[in-house]
Image (tube, rainbow, N blue to C red):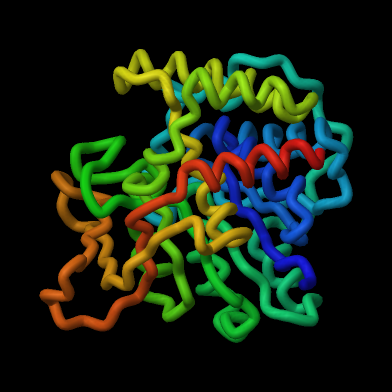
Amino acid sequence: MSPNPAILDVDPGHDDAVALMMACGHPDLDLLAVTTVAGNVSLEKTTRNALRILSLIGHTRVPVAAGAAKPLQRALRTAEDIHGESGLDGLEIPETTFAPDERGAVALIADTLRASPEPVTLIPVGPLTNIALFLREHPELKEKVSHVSLMGGSIGLGNTTPAAEFNIYVDPEAAREVFASGLSITMCGLDVTHQAGAGPEERERLRSIGSAGTVTAGFLDFFAATYERVFGFDAPPLHDPVAVAAVLEPRLLTTRPMRVDIECESELTRGETVCDYHGVTGKPSNAEVGVGLDREGFFELLYDALDNL
């Protein structure tokens, strides 16, 4: 079976960094491009972090392009309280050895899709601003997108407000456009990513599988300390790698078709992913929403991918 061609859209972020390494390390994924968006930290920092991670693991042939510096309509909300001032605090890694692609994120996505002989999977794991802008500017290329596996949202509780998960909260208007696009979407929300918590046992296993695992464990030690301070538990969820795993091994994720609408008007519930679990609205589903994760299978997939690096 040929590798699945994919574009990863990131805002590193510790779990984004792990998602990048997982995507590069697994032979079943052909990472064609990486795009960056403002989210966990500013665009300048997310772009620098993506370049540093790819430099660290020797994947400098993957083009990286900077995208949106702010949401479609709102002021940017960032998450230094979770990821630190740099977005990747806690472990010293070298500076990048290559420069970002001058085309910018939307042009890179478009050019990559045009050049690919087969449809490409988009894996956005930050705010959905770049994907919404791409769909606005290049509607003719939608048929070149085979699937969207995104990290964002929640059937239940939020993690940024009582109602909203961070990525959707930051740019709910972009999320609304993506979910209304008609594209095939898998939503990896907090309901499943919180089942991928990397506790002390998982971090020790990571340290045993070579340099990539040691780096990952170092990131997660910092991530664990901030999660314990902010949320009261020390097994930080590997949110973004779940969206990569859902592409590599779809059977790891149990999903349910649902209508997902995004709340943009209410300040109380801004960014809520309103998931019609029981089909009470009668509206057609627009996403496969994650409801369960094979936790053991997910971590084995992660260990194998990092070991390959």
